[in-house]
Structure formats: structure tokens, C-alpha cells
Length: 204
Length: 204
DNA sequence: TTCTCCATGTAAGTAGTTACATGATTGG
DNA sequence: CCAATCATGTAACTACTTACATGGAGAA
Picture 1: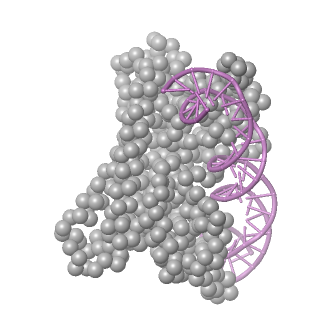
Picture 2: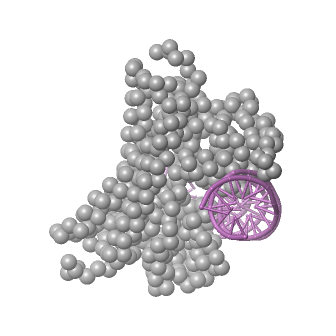
Picture 3: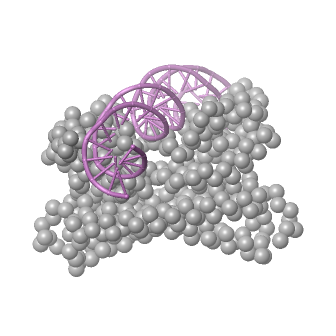
């Protein structure tokens, strides 16, 4: 895990547990619903695997931050959870903690782009296009969940829409910078600094 | 680790090893220099801990992708590495591989912002400000390494500057969206959807 | 029937971290 | 001499993942 994101000492809860707690607060009841909620909302900047959710719920319950009860659907077993008062307090306390939250992104796409000078001109261009396309798809996905975020804004939760817009702006920024770079490249009158690794100077 | 970033089966190298390889290619010789290079360039979208670098170098050497030799500085021991032909080929091959590279960001700042409706109005605003400030600082850092990226552009490596500009654009997007949201909030004539959790309706 | 969705869980493994240990060199 | 920097490495640990196992419910 990224170091600065949990700093777990003793029996403090890590970020994933608070994510689960926050989702329970927003109305996700079962582990499965939590998974779905994450996929429909924060998956742009946070993912969680199913195998993490159930242990997190168990830890939250032991800490008294959620209360679970068995609520089978028909004969299908099912545990539902609700946030407790202590849970509300703990969540707010976590949100307020202003320990440094360094911006830590881990993206192979950008890493590859960084090293792309090792490639031939057209290969580098293909990589650039792939990164661009990825962001275009990202925007499409985010747009598709926009209505849900707008509904939740109407119900007093304005911040999901905020983070959604951030995601969109984010990808737009990537697309824009890619576009500028592409342009600079395909421009017929290239200048000195724009020569790529290993290309014959005379190539049009 | 984020799943889709390595998919290691058998004895394939993971992304961190290729990052090390790429840095060696760009002229970082010792483990220490690699660490510094990462901090001065891709740390915006990739970090690597020192404890990872030396084992990675060892694996790369075993695979014949780098060649190491002992080059002490005075009495201080030191191993330097250079990329081999096979290493060049392997790096390019990795850069070309177009297995899906899903955009995966893990950012607690944005997670907290997403859940900020659980906070009081001013607390939420403070969080927003913190996220904004963080990006302002991010931009300042990136600007400070811009000259180095420009130098490397002159030497035929244009992509480091590209990814740097992406980082800047990225943070600018965050700042902009934060600003818009703040504005919407501080606006005297708030509308229905903008009411925050648990606030008395009449509060100015 | 078979497929997909709902639902919960375990097992085994990897990646990655922090913390520590060591020691030479350079500059104030 | 002391602090910062250069330099390499190990030990212990956590977070997180994939893969698997199980099974009910509803639809085609």
C-alpha cells in the first residue's frame, strides 16, 4: 500500500475501512452493495476488492462503528450493516484529520509515456494515442454516472458530484496536453528540440 | 499492488523493474542515482522505495538486461549499471505492449472530499482548501523541475517534458474545479441542492 | 438447463512499505 | 566533530490481489 495512506499503528483503522464506513453511511448495506457503490462512485480514484470489504466490515463492527444484523433475502443469507453514532463520529474525525495527504498517483500509462523516447516516432505516437483514448473512455464512464451524482446532490450530498467533475476535468487535461504534443509533432516545421531519439534528421 | 499493473506470471518482470531499467537507460547508474532520478522526474505518477531498487537491479542483471560493475568512489563502495542491448530491446518491448492500462489513481484526498457531506459546512470547506493547496504546492514542485525537463528535451528526450506538463495541467484542473465549487458555496443565493448535511436552513 | 446476478467467504501469494543497520565522504 | 549526503542492504510487516469455493434467485 502507499505508505502515507494509512500509517497504521496499533489497532487504528486504515483508509479502506473508512471507505467502507463512508459507504455504509451513504446507504450501502451489504458487502455486495458496498462493492457496487464503490464501482459506481469513487472507482476513479479508489478501488477496493471484494476480499477486503468483509474483513473491513468485521473490524468496523468489532470497533463498534457499524452494527450488523442478519437479513436474509428469501433463503439467501445476507448481513446488513448500519453506521452507529460512534461510527459517525469516527468518520468525521477521520475526515477532519489533516495529516499530510500527499498526492500519490501510480499510473503505468504515464510511466510508459515518460520513457517513450526509447521508441520510434510512430510507436511513441501510438502510445500517446492510447493514453488519450483511455482518458476519452474515462470521461465517457464518468458521464454515465453523472445523473446518479446529480440525484445525490439533490438529496444533500453535493460532494460526489464535485469529485466526479474533478475526474472529468482531469481526463480533459490529459487529452488536451496529448493533443498539443501530437500537434507539435505532426507539425511539418519541427525545430531542434523536437527531434526524436534515433530518427534520421532528414525524415519528413 | 494494483492488480492490472503487473500481471506477473512465472518470472516476468514487474513494472518497478522496468522503471528501474528505464532510468538506467536515461543515465542513472547507481541505485542511489535511480532513486534520485525517480524523485526528480516521475514521482508525480510513480514512486519507488529504495528497498525495491536494489532487488530490481539484481533481477535485471540476472535477466541480462543491465550489466553491473563495481565502481567505488574512493573507499566508498558502489555498483554502477548500464543497460545492455537485450535491455534496450526488452524496454521497448514493454513500452509497446498494449495490454490494457486502466487508469488507477488512489488518492485519499479525493476520497475524503467525496465523503465531505458528512462534515459541517466550514469543515468541508477547509478540506476543499487543503486539497486545493496541495495541488498548488504540486504545481510549484513541478515548475521547479521544469528546467531539467527542458534540458532533456534539447537532448532528444521530449517525453519527460510532456508528462511534466500533464502533471501541471492535472493539478490546475483540480484547482479550477475546487474554485468553482467554493464559489457555488460562498455565493449568497444558494439553491436547494446546495444545502449541506445537518445545517440549519436559516444559516447565512 | 444454464446463465447472470446476488452474496459471502477463504487461501495463497505478491508487492510494497517502514525501520533499521552500516559505513564512507564532504562541507561547515 | 557533526551533520548531511552518498551508498547499499536486510528484516519484519501490511495491504492488497487473484483465484477459488459455495450457493440461492430469477430470467431466458
